[in-house]
Image 1 (cartoon, rainbow, N blue to C red):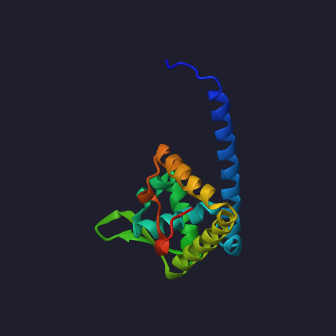
Image 2: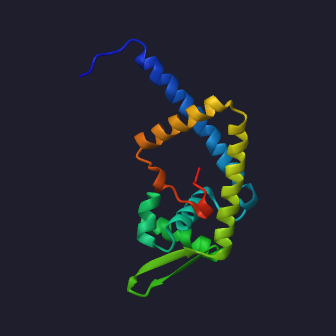
Length: 164
């Protein structure tokens, strides 16, 4: 076991509190960015759409794994999105037991619109920070993402924009 450093628990608590506050802010930004389409899709459905935007055509079972849900949950989400005209779900011609899905043009447009609004909202918040704090934030967020196993290349990039 390592030795205890005085104040280490307090520092960790302060970091966790700050990250939780930042997380609440980012969730609020994400929810606001869905405002224009919230009558059509839920946040989990949008998450599926963002993954499709980043991965392209995807097997249903792979999508379930990416979302951390079972296949029947992913199928219900895909069926709702297909009924709304936002994804196409069809049988894989190479393996008739598999379903493939992809975004429609309208689905892609919605992902791009929501991501652009999210990017603008986060940009407005970050712009209110002094340059030195912005640089520190980039460093801290990169370290946080790396510690959580989120590589910069893992984020989907619709129209070159990362999912924030």
